[in-house]
Length: 106
Image (cartoon, rainbow, N blue to C red; front, side, top):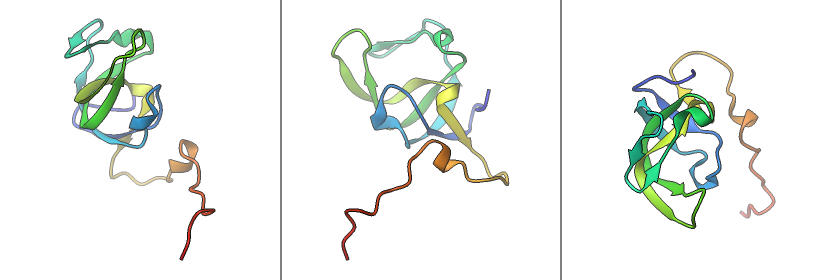
């Protein structure tokens, strides 16, 4: 696993594009089949997962048209990159495209 409890992490993937790039805090491991307000999550479906805390995290049901925002929700470890003060190369461009300058005006 990449993350650990207490880490800050950036969301780098997932089925909810509105959340990609948001910074979250790793709260605790997600429990297989646990229920959170307005959602259910099976953590072993895509590997280890965490309950994360952030601002206005979007949750979209995979079985209905339900969409909500929440401050805590589950995320797979593979969709998170921890932010730590360790030396190393910037990996931003491995998950995020270079911004376009086509519409920049001065």
